[in-house]
Image (cartoon, rainbow, N blue to C red; front, side, top):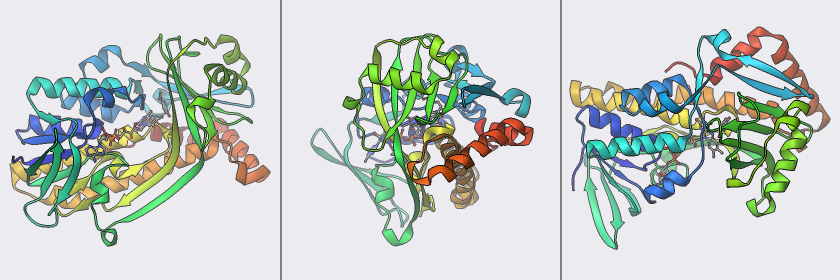
Amino acid sequence: MRTQVAIIGAGPSGLLLGQLLHKHGIDNVILEARTGEYVLGRVRAGVVEKGTVDMLDEAGVGARLHREGLVHDGTEIAFDGKRHRIDFAELTGKTVVVYGQTEITRDLMDGRAATGGKTIYEAADVSLHDFDGSSPKVRYKKDGKEHELACDFIAGCDGYHGASRRSVPEKSIKTFERVYPFGWMGLLSETPPVSPELIYIHSPRGFALCSMRSNTRSRYYVQCDAGDKTEQWSDERFWNELRARLDEKGRDELVTGPSIEKTIAPLRSFVAEPMRFGRMFLAGDAAHIVPPTGAKGMNLAVSDVHYLSRAFIEYYKEKSSAGIDHYSAKALARVWKAVRFSWWMTSMLHKFPETGEFGEKIQIAELEYLFSSKSAATALAENYVGLPY
Ligand code: FAD
Ligand code: PHB
C-alpha cells in the first residue's frame, strides 16, 4: 500500500490533519491502535478557542459546533468565598466555545466517512521506518497479518504514549518535563451546570473546576492525590468534596446526580524538541502535554495541525519545502507560550503541599493582583481565548 502522508493516531490532531489534506487533494491514510468507539469514549477537552473553531470550519466539520456549542464570553475564578469574573469579550474582543472533544472527534469521523478517507482502526504494533531517508514506511498488524504502508511523509499524531516520538533515536531529541504532585478527579453527570460560566476554584482544600458539556450535562473536577484511584472516589465523596471547595452560592445551587463517567488525569508539562525528524513530524500530545488548567491541550494540537497542513500543502502545490523546514520552530514558539500559561494557571490555583505558607501567600497575592489589575486580567484573557497562530 502507498500514500502521500501516513498519519499515526485518530485523535483530534490526526483526524483534522487527514481532513484538511483531503480537501487539498493530498492522499492520506490514518492508522489508529484502538477502535472508533474507544476513541469516542474518552471524555477530555471542553473549551475550544476561536482559532480551533476556524480550523474545524475550514475542514468542513464545524456546523454542529455552531449549532450546539455554548459561546462563553467570560469565566469566573473563585477564591476566599468570593467569585471574580474575567470578561474575555470586553478584555480581548474574543470568546471561547464549550463543546466536548468527544463531539469534535465524532464530527471529524463523520466528515472523514463522508469523504471516503481511509482510517484503519485496531492497527497493532505500529512501527515507523526510514524517515531519515527519502522513502519512509510504516508497518503494522491488522487481523493478525503484517502490512506495510509506504509514504512521502509520516505525521505522528499518536498522543503522549504513541510510537512516533519513541521511534526517534535518543540523541536526536530533547525533552523537558515537570510532573505535578497531584491529579484531577473528573466526573460527568446529567445535571444542569451550577453556573452558566466555568468556575475555577482556589480553596484551602485544593483546586476544583465547574465545567459543562451542555445546559443539562455538567463536568466537574477536583484536585486529588497523584496516586488516587477512581474506586476511592464514590459519587458521594466527590460531591461532598466539590461542595466543600465551592463558595456559598455554589453550594446552594449545585445539583448533584449519579455519575455517567469518572476518570483521574495526572498533571504534567512536557515538551519534546524538535518536532520534525527528517520526513516524520510530531503534532499534538505526541510532542507536548500541558496540565488541563489552561484548557490548552486540544487547542495546541489544532494549532500544530494548522502549521503542518500548510507545510504539506505548500510542498505538494507549490513544490516548496519552506513550510516543512520551518514547522518545528513555528509550532514550538506557540507551544511554549501555552506551556507557560498552563503552568501559571496550575501554580496559582492548586494546593502545593511542598511550597508551604510562603507559597500560599504568593498565590493569594497573585489572585488579588489578578482581580485588581485590568492588565493582569487581560493577560489571562488573551492567553485563555488563544494566542494568534
Ligand atoms: P490524542 O487525543 O491522545 O490522540 C492520539 C491517538 O493516537 C489516540 O486515539 C490513540 O489511541 C492513538 N495511538 C496511540 N498510540 C498509537 C500507536 N502506537 N499506533 C496507532 N495509534 C496510536 N485540551 C483543551 O484544549 N481544552 C480542554 O478543556 C482540555 N481539557 C482536558 C481535560 C482532561 C481531563 C484531559 C485529560 C485533557 C484535556 N485536554 C484539553 C487535552 C486534550 O484532550 C489533548 O491535548 C488532545 O486529546 C490531544 O489530541 P491528540 O490528537 O494530539 O492526541
Ligand atoms: C472541561 O470541560 O473538561 C474542561 C474545561 C476547562 C479546563 C479543563 C477541562 O481548563
